Length: 461
Image 1 (cartoon, one colour):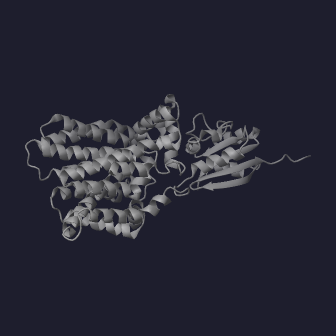
Image 2 (tube, rainbow, N blue to C red):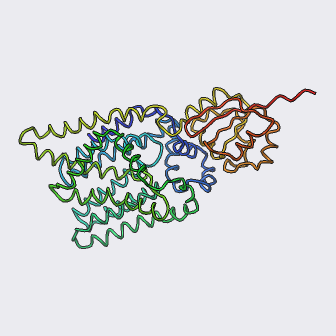
Image 3 (spheres, rainbow, N blue to C red):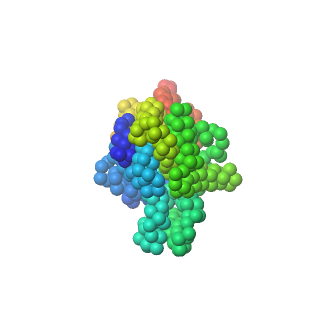
């Protein structure tokens, strides 16, 4: 049931919202020929290379439409809800598992990233799958090799999708603190070490691109407010209901396993990332720890079970979870509707592409500032069909022409379309200050801007 609900919510209006910048990067890079990938990844997003390869296979099968490219995230989210339900059932009860999976599926943050052509939903499915394997293996037979190999492989693949998946390892170590079975720790260290070894080549290769996360802010109170809005949709009833159920599930356990598993899983990855962000370099952003939402849902599901045990003398056992879940579903409904409305993403690349397609003429030149902004329009490739995207750029799209070469390249052009970020300068300023051209139109699409420059008529002598 949780998997079905998550799948239905993920498919609901999946293509209603345009790609935004990060999705545009995914689809544009994955949509390039195989021969272009090494050159592209030398300059950016090497840490996401494995996801781009997976997405490229999806695009090869079905194209670059929003439904196709977002479908892997929807399927991963449905799988996560099902695995979480199985985990709750395993460590506590059927009611806990059912409610944990449903709460997870209903949270707006989960639905938001289920409909995104990025890797966060896939990472979450693998991390929670590895958590399930860990718990089952320790409870059943820690001496079996195959489950530990599966655990290491899941975390290794998750780290190749996003290196921050490995922040779950301290939480898994905390799960084992009270375990006394012979060989548990040595086997876990071997499995965790194997996962880290699998991730090591990617981590070392991507070190040269660490500057790509320099935009991350240091966590503060604003981060907490953003996280609260993102997870719960900003509705106070949902916030306090889920948090109250989570506190009940963690503080009043019928079996201690829920607290042993959920508490470190919820606290340690986020806590470590925030600590590093405050003391070394900002690395925390809410979507990077989507997999921690599963711990919150597991604790809340246990809280539903505890609540049921208190009131079943006066009401049927099924009534309390039905009422609580209906309450949550009713209040998160508006949030689910809002995140599927145009304009709710940082950028509206579809509208930008439509404006360029509707107003540009064949042969018009396009200038991207910074040069990597070619990825802002290529998710919708028909928007630049017939346009000159090469003249105003270096041999690759990753370097801007020097000012003198840009002025020379402008000589034979009559109309130019500038695609730029807000507050970007460089060649955008060179074009704006060129006396031969005048800005005649301007559109804003979130953080992306589109402007048209027309050549001024030559004065008559």
